Length: 195
Image 1 (cartoon, rainbow, N blue to C red):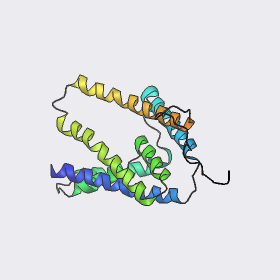
Image 2 (tube, rainbow, N blue to C red):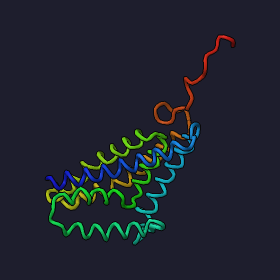
Image 3 (cartoon, rainbow, N blue to C red):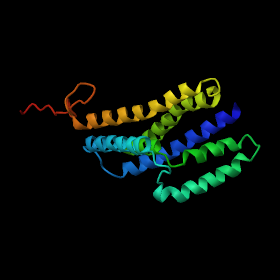
Image 4 (cartoon, one colour):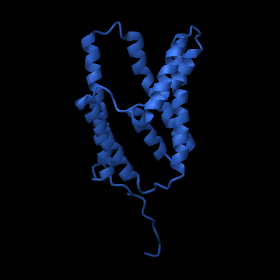
């Protein structure tokens, strides 16, 4: 149990550090007024991710520039797994958090959009915490769940990502649909007594 805790703590620490870096990066660029466009771009990216990974189903995901980093991390993880020391699970979690992943890219783009170091770090920390229940369920409860049930859970993942992508696109379009696609800027008009 201690090993699982250390692993998740390491992964959340890694995500938080990345969130801080992307929040800092985002703070250097004025994106006020561009949130609508960013929301649409992130939504389209999520839809493309679903189409590429779950519909086209390539045998090997093209990692591009991250291939070298990916290979290095996987090689180092292989060495760490041979260690019998419990403390190495924290480092395994940290390195696992650095592995290229489409969902992490999307979360990091949201961290960058916060334009704030602390907000970016917190967003990624909560993203990491949000992954813990599902991973614990797989790690601890996998043997108790039937194969058919696990397959159903896996099939829900692309549906969830697709739904989030559509929601982000709708929010960026400002269609005037309450709660779903509200018009940005309502209530932001400056009241002046000279009108």
